[in-house]
Length: 87
Image (spheres, rainbow, N blue to C red):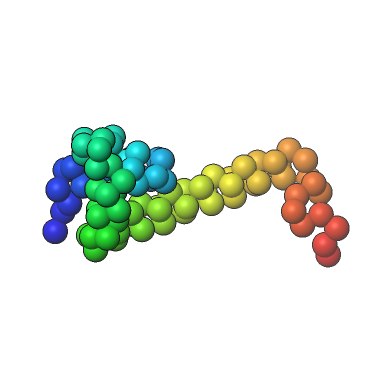
């Protein structure tokens, strides 16, 4: 089942801030309850699963960018990669 739009916004903001209170504020939850709201949202199975899925997606993208950068660097400067000196 898809997330409620407010919960989805919380997830997106949490993946930026990695701070539940800041993400709750950005998602429109009251400032005086931001810490409590953030904690409660992270306890929900659907929100937790969406955060984990988003984190895995961002991690995979970061790894792909790192591999691409390493390949480009090795193409420009052969022999200066992580495997320098290995046979």
